[in-house]
Image (cartoon, rainbow, N blue to C red; front, top):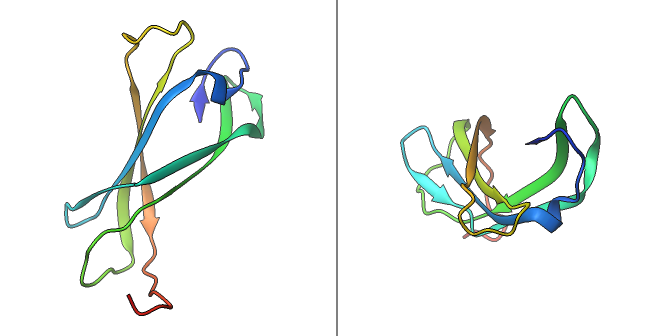
Length: 105
């Protein structure tokens, strides 16, 4: 979700995007790949633009259990092109669903 009072094409102004997940045991995993949809997933209204988002990463944990974690998204929107514009962060509490690899890794 991007808070704004105008609609715009996200890919034109997004300069950086990073994502991490903090597990309930305190371990932090940085996602290796972060992507988003340029098209809106939901109509612009109430000063919010909602885009599709996905991230993937690998972490070494002997046991992963269903739990909750904190997803942190750091991003930088630049409407002027200046490198001095401050990045912003959003944090969400998210479910962590344990899944086993079908490849036995």
